[in-house]
Image (cartoon, rainbow, N blue to C red; front, side, top):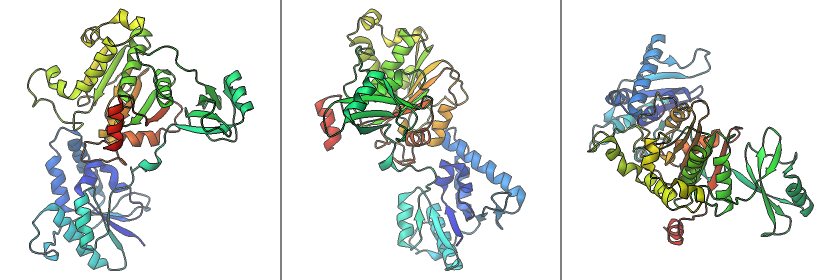
Length: 443
């Protein structure tokens, strides 16, 4: 049975191409939704750009026919039709409900449900949980847009454990690599080899090399990275990925205090100031939301950024003044000196669109607050020789338009888990302090 999907404004503004994602089913856009999209067109943020893209898509489709009568969503005849519904039908709702876009959508859904009866299933698609609750109260099936969602409970962790015999463990340690054709690995997946029959016995760690189709040994760190030593296996894996020049995209997920940002910045400083692999370390985080202008804040650009970027400054201060390595003591500089020398840049993501970033170590903190489209914008800015690091906690999202299942960070983890130039590590052990760890666990 073909279905009829009625789209809310937030679906179009989050993904303008969503109208093409419903296979051979029909899509209905209420006229009040078109009006609401029009209100966003002048915005200079990501929502405004999406609103303008929606208008362009609909304008191109209308050349094929009349939107009120239905236009095929593809030329091959395998898709459904797109309709713009002109009525509001508020007479189908109780009189005490207000004249709002949400209630127009509910009224239209009820109208189509009564009109089509058992011949077609009518479903309301919206990201607004309150609208889904109201729809359910009226007996209208409703759901969120699922095309870009990731099952967070099964999100790729970036590593696995294997139980092997003592002989295999010794062979791997001696030859520093091993081939296991019967085991399926993902590109740059980290592996913990444990001796069979021992829960906390000997273990050796490695990383899967897709080109060699072998697991290669990872040596323990004997020196710090700008004063930072890995305190657990997860941090060991993270530092390895952050310092491996073959890996051009690193994603780190984990709760507060697991070391994501500190390790990313320390690795960037090492690769920029110590090894000269990259010309510049760039550190950025979204100014909530991604496209929001900072102009309303008082002061210079630097002063405007201070409230948003203070966590980055804190990490830099710690690394530049609190390290123990001799190299770091010789460098004992402030981040201002590195900025003046052109080796460090701390920027908002607001103005990233249209830029090209070559030969840079680019760290994007709090990237769980970005949408998949915004993450795509960032990754497509990477020029030749650039490495991008995305850090964040999918369970701590400030952006009201996304959640743990459809944010840009989890989307990238899922899409790049088989890419030979990407690596992912999930960090679960808090190392900031005992208090911070317990707070994250209990609260």
